[in-house]
Image (cartoon, rainbow, N blue to C red):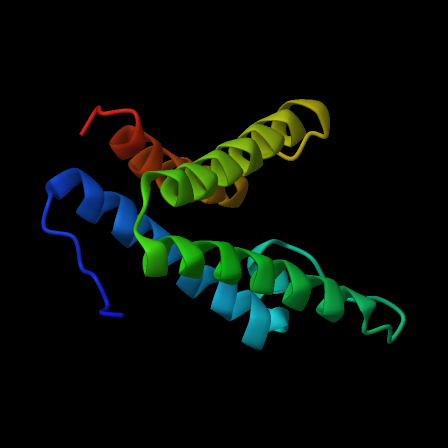
Length: 127
């Protein structure tokens, strides 16, 4: 099996979004303190359960994105794009409902939107 790097512009954008999602997931998997700090979270009372959750979530993101990178199929890019689209929706919902509208939250929303729009634009033929 050869490693496939797309040459089509739309697929290359979706591929790059999946690579970025994989890198972000690997950061959560191997550097959970940094991942929690970026999201404005911290572990409390000496408990390490927050780190375990961050590693688990990072592993999930990395695994999903790595699958999309390895198989390079529309349905895999659709999975990555729709996962980040729902994550973006959750962040928007939180910004409206939980009074968490900050510049950092807005920046993270932009990152999530880009990671959702690039694969979805390719899958639905916009790029």
